Length: 474
Image (tube, rainbow, N blue to C red):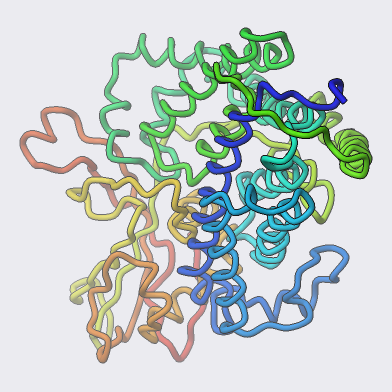
């Protein structure tokens, strides 16, 4: 029936689905490579300990019924395999119902991971991937034209992502209203990228233009998604351009990329749709029922979005079907970093040979230039940024991290760029110190080759040995 489908969006659907499969693949690869150290049986926050106190109805996951590191690895590799199949277009080679089931698999696999991931998975892009991935199940394949209802709901997600982020900025830090937040943001963001230093040193008037343009893109342009074409395509294109600017300026996991994927679903590409049969009645009924259910679940996120006490990045149901989003309601003006060091001395003192652990993404050695890791997500590096902001935030896992470093735990060391100690010679003591980091000036960069300058602030954790691993904080 013509009212149900939008044949002109068949290429938009194809591009959207392949791009979404790529994001799924990155998410599952991130899980495979990091889970042992973070949530494995001997991880910093083990899954078995978590599911023992968390009811299934609160966080539904297959790992409530069985957990082992081998099983989790197999589960994650299965997600990688299905993602590759979807990226290759296997869903277009099977009947409609089979294609829908194929898209349901990665959503169910990743839901089980997120719901036991604890603080390591407490990011808005995890819920966003699940919400978008669930809708992708009902978008159909090459046997039918894309349903208008699902295309609308994808725009509804994109609207909430952008408009919610815009509102939380206007209600949050005053620097957003003064257009001055980018005086600091590129320097204090969780994980700078290789170009962040240069973005920080752009002229301040240009930073103000950036903030003003961000407000336009997040508070005005999203409304245009629901206007006729080609205005909706132009609005989506502006959002894509803004997200690509953010990709260049920092490492935000796959947040920018999943937003770009969403925007692609609103772009109508100038092409002729291939002839397809009308959608079967059962498909129409399922899509309409799901659409009605998701709109009903939107009540809480919309209520939150219009509230003066708006919160960001929250799921209102255990399946992450409809969520609220937002980022950087407040911007730090000063960057702090926790630097972890170890020594092999039997009696530690200030003159001991303290050697620094190097992380892959977070700032450490002032001379080491940041690398581009996004859309891959370095979970430990991100939470180390939060630890510097609030030691209490790191309390559940920082002591375990220190213990694993004192043991030279191989899984934990794989999360780091470099350990200063050989595998057979673990440190006797580990300590953590808090430093203030700032970008160097152009002159300092030329003279020293360092992109960062750091100043010691305080002790974050005193020298600690394995026999009495405790967490101390400033």
